[in-house]
Amino acid sequence: MLCTSLHLLRSSWSNQRAAFIMASSPDLLMKLVASAYSVAEKAGTIVRNVMSAGDLGIVEKTGANDLQTAADRLVQQSICSSLAKKFPKLTIIGEEDLPSEEVEDSLLALGQSEDILKHTCPSQYSGIKEEEIVVWVDPLDGTKEYTEGLLDHVTVLIGIAYGGKAIAGVINQPYYNYQAGNNAVLGRTIWGVLGIGAFGFELKEAPAGQHIITTTRSHSSKLVNDCIAAINPDKVVRVGGAGNKIIQLIEGQASAYVFASPGCKKWDTCAPEAILHAVGGQLTDIHGNPFQYQKDVKHMNSAGVLAALRNFDYYFSRVPDSVKQALVP
Ligand code: AMP
Ligand code: MG
Ligand code: MG
Image: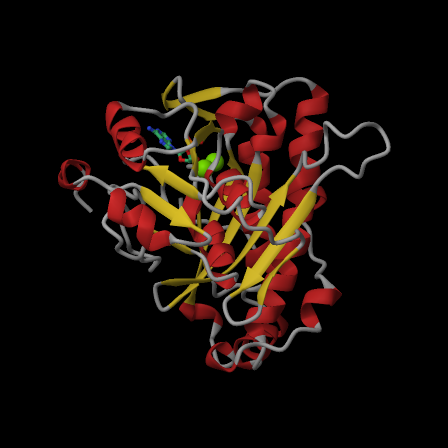
């Protein structure tokens, strides 16, 4: 859903002037990432609040494995309205198809991370204009797992694309640490920009010489399993969420993310891809083709997902031709 048709007071002279100043500012990208960070933290709070209130408001979209909850709806409203208010010329595409309506002030997050603003914008992105950016929003990745109480699988994904490429991303994990006991701080936000790196976690490689594959737990198929079997893995980890699986790669819990199936969309891969690429990893479709993130691109990643922090070429070399032939980009 295109989120930019929100009820915002955009026509006043001061808003236009502010938009012009932001559009011509050399470090627009850093301001956007710093704002997306605050917005993602707010999103994490909304996700936790909906769960503690006890009524998830579950709706089936295309079926029982494709759900939407009140958290998906509220978080999308929060992210899209907050970013559109500060950056009115952005194209923002969110997963959920929602009626365009006034968003309560209590859902807005208009702050920014001062820490992120201290980083210098990579020179290749310093001249970017607001209208050249596409933001891909998955308000709640791993909804199925959220409804089943597998809370640490859940993430909020804000991906930033320029020139069709994922260049920055913010991931909030609302229930990070929830199994660590009462004194643990709940939730975290990871962010990354190509040319700067990724922050908010400790980068770790998976154990050397072991092939640990992370894949879907709720959208499996014969093709997914055939592809994994061809890698002859030492271990297969089945968890929910594209964001969660990329976190496993950058924290050394898995060595490759293999999903030889359609089902993942651009809002699932944009933020995770940017963060993985920012630390030297690679994420493509199952043919090794990079994803495109222009505003008019097809949402579905029809040819699956393959990602690794290290040794991507090895995992790519193991994908059988039969699997490639079955998945048309
Ligand atoms: P999973 O690894 O199954 O959690 O999937 C990662 C992301 O892709 C989640 O946002 C899923 O909702 C989405 N996804 C994957 N396969 C499907 C499918 N068959 N139908 C709907 N969504 C899917
Ligand atoms: Mg998702
Ligand atoms: Mg989602």
